[in-house]
Length: 340
Image (cartoon, one colour):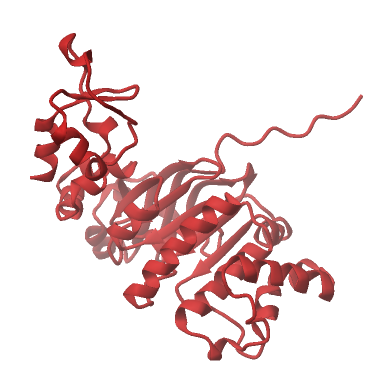
């Protein structure tokens, strides 16, 4: 009888009840009334800081999931817990179906070598190694031969736009190029999941924009599951299929960009998105209403995924409500309410 391959997990990343508490009573807070104290109260009473508090979320295969928040919100601690670079206090983390929290040291090493890769704000390149050997470093750890890993490294360098820089040293490259090397090193091991911890925050604005576009392009080409940490809402809205906003270790809202901008969960999220041009984020599907009998006669039709900014002319120039595929119709009043 031929054995069947294991079924692919429904979620590539699954997190439930995740806590990280720093301090002398780390393992004695959860399950007591103290766990509900504010961060300041908990620190004053126990000397402990709850950096991540009962966090839960799922990331689907091939999704770009962005976690954003201000400094101190717990987002970087969270991503480090996912790879157990920081040991969680409690909770479960599964990546590609593998139990990260319960993994033995050997299994954890294998997980980091083959299934997940991280890209940090500080590039972490080896200064004494040429670019090609920096990119091939993870493959060297995996035990691949020199010729094979260098061949793979050259392929990835070409993919990230660094063809011809094989023999350069990191200090001969610009900051943006160094970050491309870091990205290439992560991609070289062909991981299932890429974890980004504010990788572009130290870059100049124009280089940062280019790197964001590079991530979008690479995601379209290689289709990896990405979890991206940032403090920049514009970056989150540009990159994320879904976004989780953190505050004081807690996720206060998770949703698609249009859900956060169009229906913020509380005043904290509303303050975040207040200055974002809604027409650049909201889609026709989000604004569409159910049609009346008169609405269905004539008028153009646009896809539900069309951004409002791209539909303004068509809607304003039409003498009838515009049909929105699979969602209803949209009229001038709805569009004017967004762009006003």
